[in-house]
Image 1: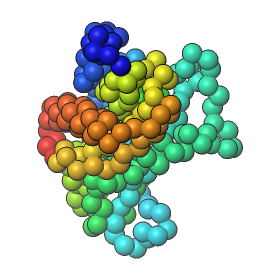
Image 2 (image 1 turned 60 degrees about the vertical axis):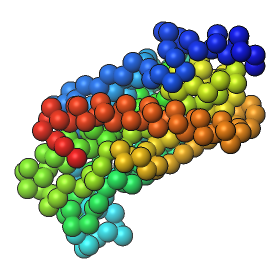
Image 3 (image 1 turned 45 degrees about the vertical axis):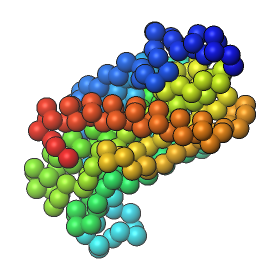
Image 4 (image 1 turned 45 degrees about the horizontal axis):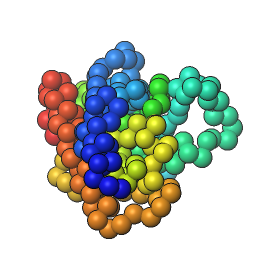
Length: 251
């Protein structure tokens, strides 16, 4: 790509620069019955994340005194332009993959030992999909989980606060040979390669998923994508901390 075209790509939809996140909105405690709830918006993507605490753990943790966290993910029928069918007896393979990613991401920053035999159930429901639903789910689910376990600790249900640090996620990709942060659906659908990254507030990486859709990625491009994701995650975690500080939670 020549320099003129690269300069043309520096401005995106809504005037975003290549290293700029979509507008990020986070609203906490929006559901009465949930122990922790968050509505997170990244551009036109909206995900409702809830956390509920229930007594009991998987069989492999029985009688250990340790807790657990698990996640489920789904897309509401009207979250896409054409109605998405609800999961039936057989779950959508993509949804299963994403909910496992959400669970792994949150468990990576948890210390369950001695917490008490309770399970934190995370539910992420996509209300509107415009790219980045899995990464928004992780970033929002962390806040919902923190709100949930904070209440449980204060009530004396949990022996300790299991979250040890913040975690968030964001996407990046190569579109017309230009690395971009936080892809919307239009960018993602036309990307030559895309990447999702999960990382904690200490900079340590939880997971990277990278896929060459239309071509392979050079080592230099990979490092650029990783730097973009780190920048975006740093900004998302800063917002997480603002939200939780208002609730009196500092991790």
